[in-house]
Image 1 (cartoon, rainbow over the protein chains, first blue to last red):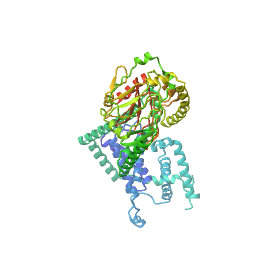
Image 2 (cartoon, rainbow over the protein chains, first blue to last red):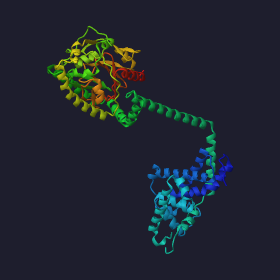
Image 3 (cartoon, each protein chain N blue to C red):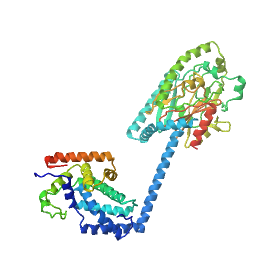
Image 4 (tube, rainbow over the protein chains, first blue to last red):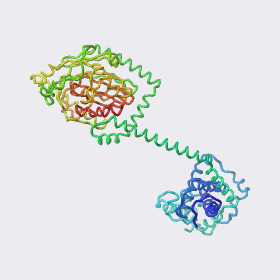
Length: 171
Length: 406
């Protein structure tokens, strides 16, 4: 389903229902923090309202939102506030209620943490390819990099993951 | 962890990350607020103002850049427009570097003040040496972009043999009489009779006085050379100009022997030189740019914004004809390096009466003014001279240069 941009609750709700989860996941793959991921996703939606772009298709709409979100995440990661911040003590984090809602704490978290520990350029491509099931062309469009580069990063990301997990990982 | 993991596990893990209802409500409120602000008149006006300001800044920047390019091109203006543009664009990086250096030059620091004081002391010493030295010396003070440079050169003796090639019948010469007015006030500068080594000595102090247009006059000995030489335009990069100049200078030195021999044989040129009249240059002396346009020296300066006349040097003919020089590519009378020292002098145009430097904010324009022609040479702030012209071509190019600064 594809709606052209229009101001009003109906369109806003359609955007939020359609893309909230995907954008939060994408932002989470960058910032590895649910609170920041939600803030960045919200900023992306506000940017959509400010820019009110014309989309040709649903793919165009999705690619635009993903690209804006990716740029905001990169800016956020590079911002001075983040660079100067220090991580909380692990004990405090363990005692804090999980802000990730109903996230399971089974073995799947193990591989997620491994993927998210990869360098940013590899984990983003892996996320978009394996989770969002985007084609190499679409990923190249969102990240504004050549298609060949996307393929290279995908292969290197998989190899890094294989090195980290060893026999535990099955491609 | 004995079980095997694959990317499906990652997919399942990430699927657990979902947007909460609280997030959606908050995001919806934020979007509505953004929409409200976007429609607010003040925000609209603010956006229009920002857009207008950005557009104006872009236009201003473009105009500035275009003007600067035009100005750079104007300093290298020649008859062949395409060659000039090509040369200008090839040297655009050099222009930028030169401008940067010039900008640095204009910043007066304590070091510069000290350097200026040292330069003045050296200038005084040079004057003393000149007064004592029996050699023929021309001391030329050129003010370039606020920095004083002292240029000392040994005047080349006037030669006559080379004039054969460009000489015309006496009737033609009479038709093209000098348009410069003679003045009886000749003083300050000693000029030897034509045909001899001319000991022209102009002290720095005298030149400063000469900067006041109507206060001083200069008497120079000039052959009554009225030949019409074809157009020649030489445009090249400064470095190759230096090479060409060096080569030509070497060739000219070799040619001196031949010229001397011909003089000894009593050729026609020797006769011409003997008959050369003494000319006097004043601020009111007329300079013929073209048949339609004639300017006095002071008017010429007025055509250039902020132009100050400085008759810095007077001299006679060179050692070869313009034709020879055009063929060999010697077009430079002086190359002043960026550091302000004179690297090479002499080898002025074959025929000229005096040199008028017109200094403006955009550089120094040097006009070699002869009996029937004006050779116009533009020099940038670093004193690099790019072009030389003669006769009808001179007129067109000088016009071009002048019009660009009207």
